[in-house]
Amino acid sequence: MAANLRNNAFLSSLMLILLIGSSYAITSSEMSTICDKTLDRAFCLKFLNSKSASPNIQALAKTTLDATQARATQTSKRLQSIIDGGVDPRSKLAYRSCMDEYENTIENLEEAVEHLASGDGFGMNMKVSAALDGADTCLDDVKRLRSVDASVVNNSKGIKKLCGIALVISNMLPRRS
Image 1: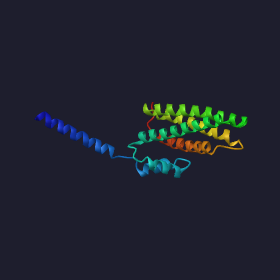
Image 2 (image 1 turned 90 degrees about the vertical axis):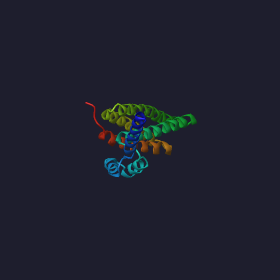
Image 3 (image 1 turned 90 degrees about the horizontal axis):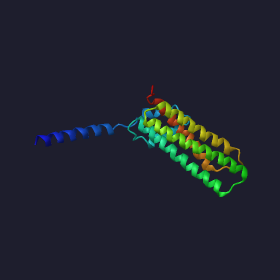
Image 4 (image 1 turned 135 degrees about the vertical axis):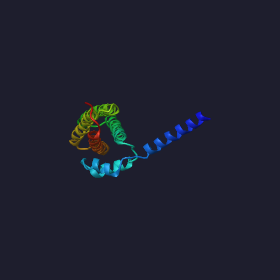
């Protein structure tokens, strides 16, 4: 009987802790602080509001990196489809260069997630910066073309915005000494 009471007390305490811990989410004030430091505040607020259930800044960083990775992977697949679909040689060269940039971008984002998981905000920042450079270089490559695929341009711009959010968040994370 005493063991049963201890188990019930333990379970009740555990439930209370989980309830209190899970009720916390990123506040609108924290969102504003983050978005005020980005280049596109409206985009940032819209994105963060859709992710407001994140329980803490680390979880929000992970969610942002996941969204960035998903968009980078989508863009990479679109680039491959364009290359395979047959385009003029000049465009093919630009899209291949862009494809190379996105392979590096995806790799950098994967490493950013690893840095985040190990508690290394600085390392995450460096890898997100490199990913942003890849999307930016891709935009430069395709802007010179006469006919540019709108989804590649729009996704690259979106990736740059998401990287901007991730960079601000990474600066709020603890630094490893």
